[in-house]
Length: 224
Image (cartoon, rainbow, N blue to C red):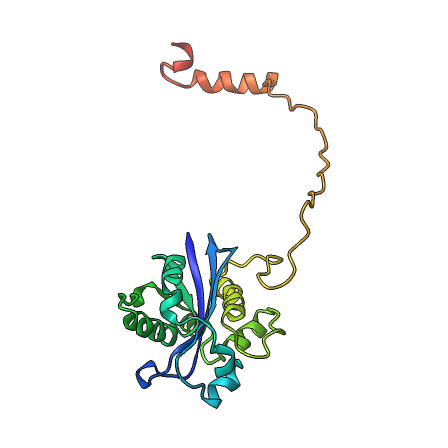
């Protein structure tokens, strides 16, 4: 089962107001395990960067000036996500921006049916509790110390761990952001105590009891 954990950074909150995507990060998971395959791109939004958005992700207009446009990366992006489910934190936001960019590029928008919204899962599972990514990392003891600012690929990696916790599938020690466990570990041998074979021959008393029981039966099959 292949899934893509996805996050975006943008110039603002609403693509209908002319805001654009400036970063996309995707992490591939197969059978709820990160494969190490990712897609990541900074994107020139072809517009200015509002101060409020810069304060969130730290991506300046100058930094993005020489980055590719969305149309330059869309083919690689669409090929990477394929037609599988997309795990997104607040899916309506990211899907709205992605579909706006796809439409401008002359491509079909993605169906919302593909989106697995981890915000909705978290709110159902922990009603009344904060459902933002930092709060969920804290709840599940996931190290997000590198998250000084929002970053699409880092956030996608953190979200992959949060998602597995939310659905009950995360295995301790299989961190997607921390150091990997040492390979080559051999399980300790289990000592086994040999037992003598158990006797299965019936005793004389058991044979006598069985004979007495058979005598009470009409035409027993044992004497056919």
